[in-house]
Length: 383
Ligand SMILES: Nc1ncnc2c1ncn2[C@@H]1O[C@H](COP(=O)(O)OP(=O)(O)OP(=O)(O)O)[C@@H](O)[C@H]1O
Ligand SMILES: [Mg+2]
Image (cartoon, rainbow, N blue to C red; front, side, top):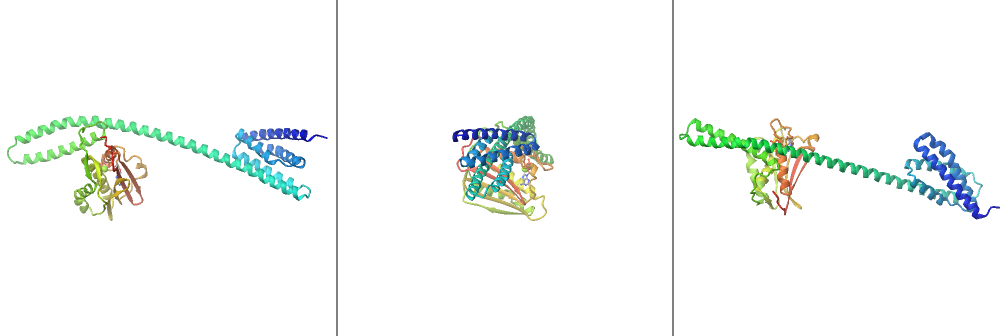
């Protein structure tokens, strides 16, 4: 008669062999789906037979076998699909075996309980693997996205740098001759004593020169080179900023049948360069009006001052939305959908806002396009 200890060790050996066989068949199955069925039909009966024999002799230790299988699966990186195949096979075979046991309810009950426990263990391990897989996948995806974002930022940075350099040199090329033209025109004009038709022409010439100067300054503004060194930081009333803008655009809005809706809150002070903040805000209104002109009827413009953590100035219009393909690039210089557009407005606005430690947000959904300028209540200005 075999001693209990011998029996136990031979059972353990048997189980180790059995697990090895299982591992081989699983490994094969990882390479060829057909082998999995063959492998499983070969080793699952063995596992269960051993298990049942074991339960008759020494009280079932299915949990232990479950743990070993789990450990094996963990060490050998078995996929969750594999575990579910194994699980199914074991479940099927085990149930048949339990049903064919002699009618001993206690034994059957215990077998079923143990089977349940075993399956539960394997299933929770499957879940664990599944979550690990998902987490790994998620991590990979996250890394990929971060990498792509980094590349995109780098590319955008390079692009903006090239554009800035280009606009800077272009603007300088224009500015110098323009300054001489302006000077000579003023000289010529001063020599004309009488108010003649020619004097009238000078008005036009000066107007056009100023326009050109304005454009050149915009280009210079875009470049990273600082051209206006001595900015004076002022205390700007956000309510006055809006009221002044309404006065400036009032006639244009009436002429074009644009209904204006204004919402104001308690006045707040923005610390900044007034002329620049004004420019940023006016560029948004200008864009909103231009978008509304593409619409026949029901043109609406909303201007709002909101106070939360920041001072928020909102300009919305119900004109045609910004096309999805453009949404990521509207703040880049020279992006425009307009026939005569230079595509500078939003990039200048963004630059101004960011120099004031603020933020610009655009939402264009459904029938409304909204731009928000956010300025911090207390900002350190580094212009
Ligand atoms: N409120 C808006 N509604 C719809 N589209 C807009 C709006 N604001 C901007 N856009 C889109 O973003 C593009 C870029 O605007 P941006 O102000 O930079 O340049 P632009 O208006 O085309 O030219 P510029 O302002 O230099 O005269 C516009 O051409 C337009 O397609
Ligand atoms: Mg514009």
